[in-house]
Amino acid sequence: MLVPDEELAAEALAADPDALVPDDAVSVWSLGSSEDGALLPGWYMPTPAGGRGRHSRARTQVVYLLVAAFLLINAARLCSAYGRVVIA
Image (cartoon, rainbow, N blue to C red; front, top):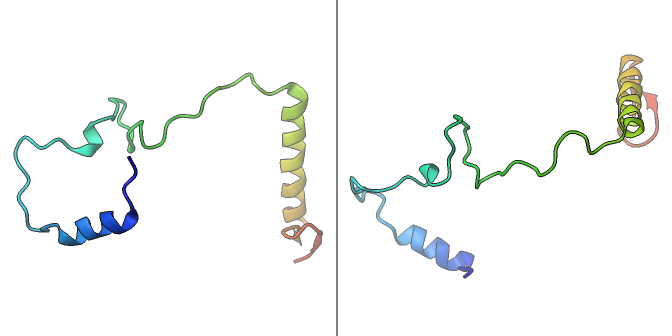
């Protein structure tokens, strides 16, 4: 069920900022957090699916070549921000 932003804003503005939190209240951060000491719980930003081994060797080499080309362009004090290589 989706709640409109206007209703959420009205509830937030009507809430008492000085209300006492009960002793048995559960923190939203402890609902889905793992024990690995991560700063964000798993439900907030899940790990991407897949992993190593999905890219071919040729694709990896092309990526390395592109990164090296941009590093060389920047090392030569040139700018490639807008698609053309110009003197910076």
